[in-house]
Length: 109
Image 1 (spheres, rainbow, N blue to C red):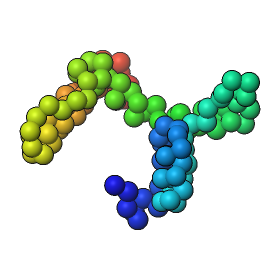
Image 2 (cartoon, rainbow, N blue to C red):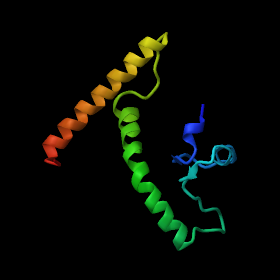
Image 3 (cartoon, rainbow, N blue to C red):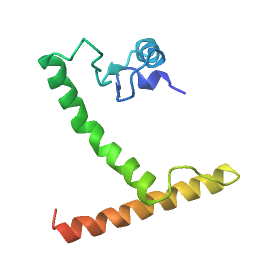
């Protein structure tokens, strides 16, 4: 549920009529990717804006992609908020350990 604190925040989401209403209702900054449609390609300006939006979005998408592909998905199958929170925490810890190993191995720091 969005709150008043969300006003002015950037929203990186998928496009759709419902998302447009939410963005407008809460006064958020629209960072949704623009889409081309048949017989209506994106202009060069729209392509540049999409490229700028993608730079932030890709950092998050890689994390979810890794969890989805390598960790058997993002579905949490347990009963209770405490157990679900613990499961999500362990998934995040596992991702961070794998990412740390990759950073060290590739000498990225």
